[in-house]
Length: 68
Image (cartoon, rainbow, N blue to C red; front, side):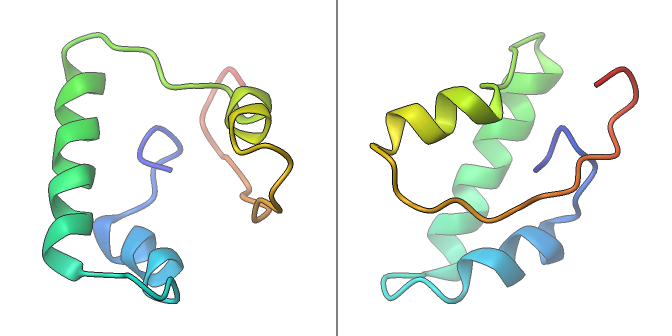
C-alpha cells in the first residue's frame, strides 16, 4: 500500500478492523516498510502475498503506481 501511494491514515483505515489492531504497532510496521522501500527494497507482488496467506481473502486494492 505504501508503494501504491496510500497515506498512513489510509493504511490505518484498512487495518483498524482487525481484532488485534493497535495503532502504535501498525505505525511501527508502516515506518519499517517505508524505510525498507526507501533503501531500495522491493515490495512483494500481490500474487506472492496471496500465496503466503494460504488462500485467505485479500482486499482489492487499486494501485495507481506508475509502471505497474
